Length: 274
Image (tube, rainbow, N blue to C red; front, side, top):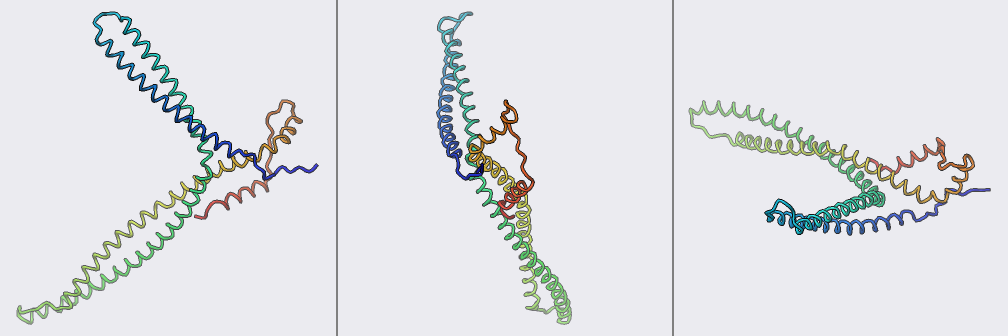
């Protein structure tokens, strides 16, 4: 008998949990609203009870005060019951929503990894260009300083020779202005380089977070895929388990090394290049 266990026909598992998630979400909203209303009712009755007891002058509670206390306590119990129900529905909804959103989270993480990889390369390019420009500016500053020193010495000698009657050489003025502009440009480029390097330093951690998010979401998607296909195999698995032991409810399947390696390679190939 030939078995076709790896049929691609699905059972609608994902669509079912999506519908269940939507239903739970609606029920959670309704339960939360009921819990909030009950809490407001309790708080109102607690205030009314306090005000009534504050006006009472006797050492004992009267009928009105006792009735107000009972109403307050009943409202409190109702509020707590509805709060627990809302929290339970919220927990179940969050768990199911995490599964439902796994494919979208996986795709979002894939896009984030791709974007970060592009940003890293762009930052590296900008860092390289900025470092090259800084090197040129530093070289130009050294060159200007040397020329200014020579021009200053020449101007000094000219001033002495002129007996104090002296006009500042245009070349020295021009070199001094260029030096100040070059230094200012160097300062801005050094600031820019620090910013680029800081941004580049953040990329590895961001990439690891995105890769981790991708892996977690992929694991959930794999579980969804398993649940889509598993019911078609359960009869055969159950037969093998019961044949081995009449009260068996589990059956351990050993995955061949080749299949495990193929799965590992497939998962690695799905991870976007970083």
